[in-house]
Image 1: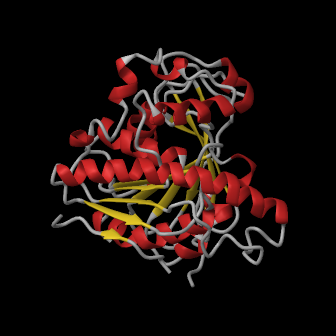
Image 2 (image 1 turned 135 degrees about the vertical axis):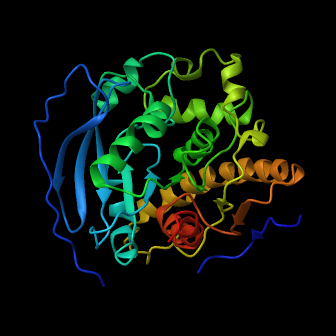
Length: 340
């Protein structure tokens, strides 16, 4: 179909600026709008920020990678982590070359370090299971936070250009599509890396139930009973016509072992157990996201949507090496949409 490119091939120094940050008390007030509670410079150009979310009534840890030159406003790229929300160092800045890759790019890179097993959506009810595993109040209002609260805070506190883009992996690869549907004017472009774009009753819903269940959450607290219309309303395949006509990059592999699925890969580090888990679990998950992605591709092609680039890789598992490549490959799209 004209305008939609399905790529079936593997994708094969700046100084840190000195920035003054105002650090306030970490105590969270019970009233008031979204705001920065604290901002502490971390390694290199990273800043550890806590943002108060009125909708969730708690502070949300957020990592901000600042551009080397902070003398002029920069746009913002939001990168969401996967199923564990960035706990246990499973975050973009640790598992990929994000700090190095963006060293010469005039952009803020913002990553929440929370939201494990939440699908970054607005839940109907607080969830005791997720409250326990995430050590918080169990309130998940992530659509509200990511589309209404956080962008306003980041724009004001870091003096950005107000232009935003959004990317996410795995669980968040589903979320970014729903966030784009919920707030079609907030993000200039969106990328989904190895996400399952299906949530309706059937394989898509089963996938969501497994993911939330692993974290001890009750999926019915998210979108209601399994026959509730909300499950279908959050399905990007069924609701593809609601996806905004902004540039999008959507990618998956097949689950077949690829170039990063070897003992020699630095992320596996000659650990046979890690390799076995990558091949078995990571291969199976990626095969599932491949199925979902192909359903979305068929649907959007049928609708004549020429704003989406699909990158369907013939080999690769559900793992960071491939997502790093995907980020590099999608950056030209992000940059153009952000005016860079």
